[in-house]
Image (cartoon, rainbow, N blue to C red; front, side, top):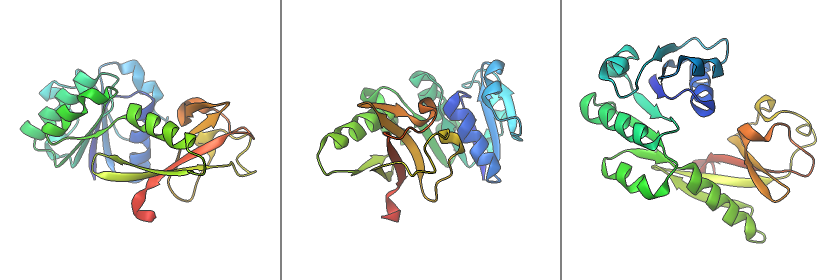
Length: 205
């Protein structure tokens, strides 16, 4: 599968590396060449520096033959514009955007774009955790239903960095620590009193 990733922050760089490791052809685009330092040293995809909404830059990243484009920059406006270009001009079959402002999600949907909103996910997971006895919640992201489970850490996890922990199914989305939810990339090591939030495709359940 040929994938173009827009944005090389913590999410974009990790996502690009994961796809590359799985054998996909990956190109990552950023207007800041310094951001490529976020990539793993063994990333073997294409790195393109330039404004992501520039069609020539997108062509350099292989958008004309791409199967998927994922926009994960910090700017919702950039994400929606590059997704529109990908879908309307280059006819990319699957286009996915991360957005921070839930109020703008309907705009993406009107253009037939799939979205992932970390703000909504965090609020829903925190709300579910407040309900006694409810340690499983389900949420729709784009066209996919995701299940979040709240579990105690296994003994082998304690003291280890999250990025070094391999789980059999799903992924570690974050942790609850001292009453506060922390995304996985910010949590560092797993502590004994943490509650781990696991995310997985609802089809497994």
